[in-house]
Image (cartoon, rainbow over all chains, first blue to last red; front, top):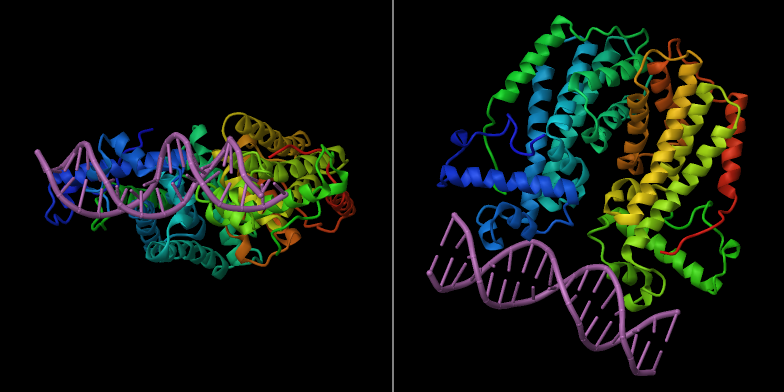
Length: 243
Length: 243
DNA sequence: GTCTATAAAGGGATAGAC
DNA sequence: GTCTATCCCTTTATAGAC
């Protein structure tokens, strides 16, 4: 699997020019990709700025032409995961879906990032505590929003009387446990997003529903939701912040 | 919650003397406890040996009288979690138990460490990749053994025809996902081991069993198993390695 | 046992030449 | 745009005085 830009990366042509050439943004993306690879492999604190430069074929001085600081680099990596997640969660919330289908789509959206952008997700889930000050605040807000969107889905299930009596916050955390820890081992396995999501949701839904879940992994509403998410992944993003 | 030694720490009097005074081992334990606290709070790579010394009231030179190296310190912290886990897993395997009760006990054993020795577990689950060479090999072997003991429990359920058709390895990983990721958020919540394990096992068992799980959290065999585990936690350990 | 001193290397970030 | 040189600080670990 390539560690470089995936389909939902911003295309240089869609960016605010901000007085920089196209080559500048291309090179900058490459630098961030290299940082993602090194941070995920060796850890953020154990990776030196010089290591990134060397891997990019740049001296430290030249590297700082593309980045503002090491920590800003880490923050941008976080946004590269959080922003697509929030976008997809909002799209799922906007659809008219049954409770099981909506939960299943949230699961697939999250696992899509975990599997197809594994290095990014590793950094995002493993190194977030290295962010400080404003970086930390911003990241925490985004993350809280995302987790709340999961709880909102569970609340739909509860409103519709489908759930056994449960503490919804702990139930949300259990759902996140299952999905988030996947980054620790998934690189060594050959699993598809739909298959792993199918297993997780089979266990989780059977675990919380009053009546057994039906495995309609090819239902019309699920297929439609998948198409919506896929279209988001092909489309370019809008804005960007400096690293 | 105090970051210092818990009940299943070795008592100084039971250690091999190895020519050191009792005070030496007491001080050494204190140093390790401080390292656990700093590593879990700030990260292994971001914590300097001098930070540990300062928190312990020792200069760097004096600190190295108690530890062999920073990495050996990290390795010892791992053993402080892995060794009790392996001991309890072996004790559970030796008991005559139904499949649901055995799984529930494994869950409680693991969550006991996650909740009651949270700082240790944080370091153990978060920093294991910083171990290299022999340290890494030894740790990986222990961890594989533990995970295999979970899969063995699932195999009992399958042999007894209680499970729906499932990939047992992925099912084991799902079980571990639920439990292991708990260290990320449990410090901010006030949950009891039995309660959280009850939620996880309710969801997980209902998720994998052919017929619904009964919530017999106070059954005789479960109570007996809990008593066995508790006795292990009160008893002292036997050997130790140098850090 | 604990200290100070020091080794030998590496950290992030900046200035200014080219 | 990229380089070298440099600043200033910190790193792990050891040596040897007390």
